[in-house]
Image (cartoon, rainbow, N blue to C red; front, top):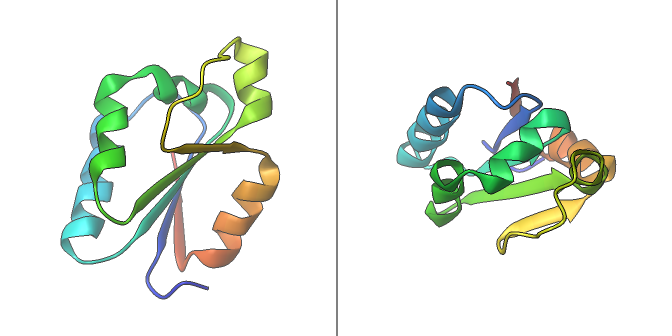
Length: 101
């Protein structure tokens, strides 16, 4: 477990303001953040406002390739790791706390 790491699982294309606020607060407090996008949450890979989170130090984003394929998202965004539910499981294992949106 990474000390103090916050995990955020995103399954819906909603709550951008909340997600960004939590990420910003964690960053200000010195905590790293790991986000995993799944199901309709992969739509955030096309949202420029969400992609601004990639520029925050200590933030890592991974995404379910299968969900992208099902929704027809074939382009990849630099800085996002495209993988599987294994990446989700690793996030759950490594994070001290996990939020789900």
